[in-house]
Amino acid sequence: RIRTGASPRHVPAKIIAVADIPRTKSGKIVELAVREVVHNRPVKNQEALANPEALRLFAGLAELKD
Image 1 (cartoon, rainbow, N blue to C red):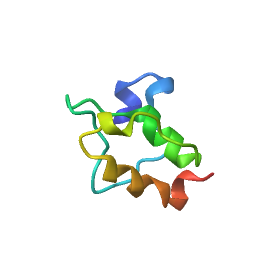
Image 2 (tube, rainbow, N blue to C red; image 1 turned 90 degrees about the horizontal axis):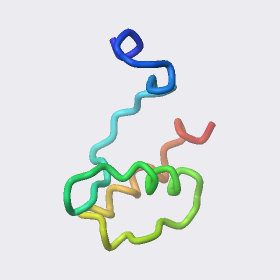
Image 3 (cartoon, helix red, strand yellow; image 1 turned 180 degrees about the vertical axis):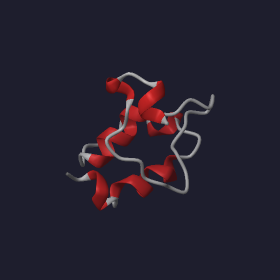
Image 4 (cartoon, rainbow, N blue to C red; image 1 turned 90 degrees about the vertical axis):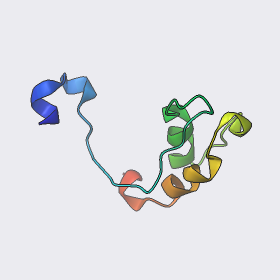
């Protein structure tokens, strides 16, 4: 269903279920922080996150390594 309703750029290569998604204190999803964690780079400004512990969920996902 996603593929028919979105442009190719917006269709994810993988869909992975996680227990939580990191968000700012105002409720916005922090995609950049997730990308940094997946690529083993430090995340800046973690104090702006409402749930920084959610980043750890993405660090160990082998599905995202390739």
